[in-house]
Image (cartoon, rainbow, N blue to C red; front, side):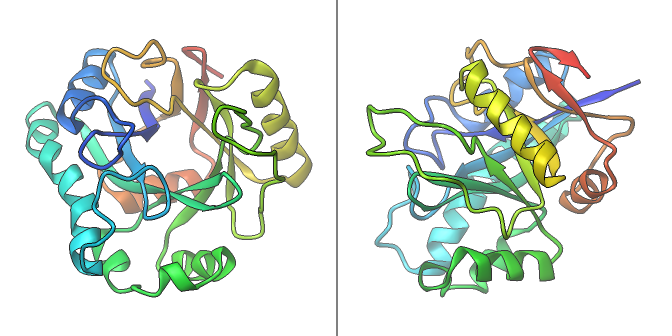
Length: 232
């Protein structure tokens, strides 16, 4: 038996582009037969819904509150809701960071001043894992140019993003094959009725109840890609 997990999901509480609540997203994925999902709202430099003028700890708590707003429902449904973030590190590039709780983010208030490579070192020292989101995405409507992804801090590459066209995903897959990095898949979902729900993510042979279990399973290569609804 395989248990499906969404790895790239937004909410209106944490992401300015999110159209539905984290609880609504949990309901949608539970109805689609998923065992769990990682909430990866846009972080400090991304399209965040958390006010940028708040003190650092309050800002970090805001991201975690988005997660907490849906946790009671997730527990009621026996749905493994996990906490992550999507960090914009410059030049329209973003990374998905898994496995770390809010205490890590509160304890690193100098994140706006450090390089993404140093952030990666801290994430890894704390037991987290980094997957580069949609590395070949280019949308002229809001991106001024295409920039190559930085991979020095990455453990994985999101080789399938349901919100991107096949040619972009094919390039991401080729990059993973070239570098030997782990592979993830995500819908990049922002609303409860999105057609990509059920079409992406990772499937595991066991339930993953905690952030730590999720990262350990990823590192061990236990996850199988879900692409266009099929488990590879």
